[in-house]
Length: 262
Image 1 (spheres, rainbow, N blue to C red):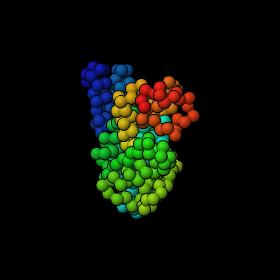
Image 2 (cartoon, rainbow, N blue to C red; image 1 turned 90 degrees about the horizontal axis):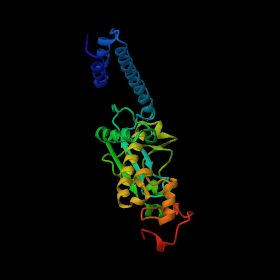
Image 3 (tube, rainbow, N blue to C red; image 1 turned 180 degrees about the vertical axis):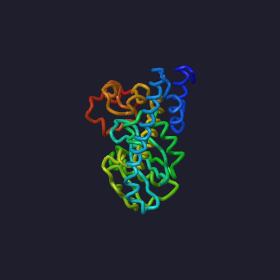
Image 4 (cartoon, one colour; image 1 turned 180 degrees about the horizontal axis):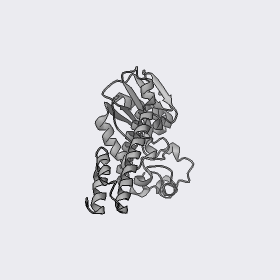
């Protein structure tokens, strides 16, 4: 025998995709039902990997379409809707031979997968940067203008100057670079998807840090969005310094003298 079923299972699960075909050929004639289940799982893993490569190839559609441009940058944001915290924009320039898998709209990924991809994107991108605009500025100029400001800051933070921007649905004013707005771009362009991941991870980390400063509001969980518990806390103890005052004006907020954070 080639080993116990548990040993074979561990070996197949630990193997890289490149090694799996060889291992499958070693075990696929083993008549034990447990081994056959392990082999089938390995085959499904290969099939899923090939399907993911096909999906990623489709995500390069816009980058291929505009391939005459030397430096293409994806732009996206995180945090337009929350009641508290900053809006964060991401800008990413990927090399044409980039082989990162599993990039997608950040909202479709688990937190663990976003964190993994965040590091990979920074490692393999030509350049990646974020722009951050805080709640005071959001209240001053409104969330749309603050989003544009964060996007311009992200582009300015790149180590290279793009000659084309692929944006998630918007056209950024006051920027002298050709732009292509793409509806639901974070799920249709690999560059925009990568930008959405670094924006989301950056903002989530900021909100976790702010949770330690203002623990009553639960920022580490809802990240500033308007959950029922979050709204209830605002109405009980008032807002804190990172709340967007223009977003909470219709709440039943107590007198300022009773706010915990004044």
